[in-house]
Image (cartoon, rainbow, N blue to C red):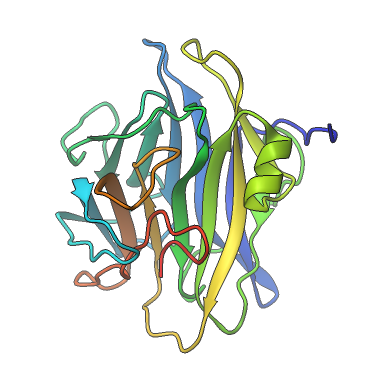
Length: 260
């Protein structure tokens, strides 16, 4: 077995932009204080004044491309206003606006397979078409410790770059099966029989870019889902334009960028 990478609990995805970097999203694991459940939080970055859009569906139709409709909008004011939560139990939901302990800004939860389902596999995708207008890091980048920054290069000819998340219980097998990098989140909670690992893969679609600036996050179907039949899914996207629509999505198409 190959040596394991250092355990990390959260990452901030950044992408080089000229002489600086752009913030894309933060991924963090958190145990619940009042239950055996736990959550993987995905929080995209944006600029104050942008608009958060959210979508929730108990049954996304089969196929590689699905058009999502904005079901709720809210002005983005600070990091955390837009959040996708993937629970160990398999429940997923998105917050569109400030929430704290309130559920007023939460769209209807959906239920997929638990995050530690033995099947493992793709659970979520974070994507962006351009680094234009995305905020720069406000603190120095960290390469070690439990909370790190992960560099995700954006190719000059990419029409959309996708940062894909995969789960499994064997990091070596995950690397072989999904061509993942060396970094993994290691997550545990009382309801898990064994430690769960979250790995990452970066893909890009090339051509002529037509999508506007912003970040899209999609998940909720759970590991092992196959898009040969309807699957649950939740999505949120941040964009400068209040009327912006997300690009058509292909949640479980593992041979190309999942958000296209």
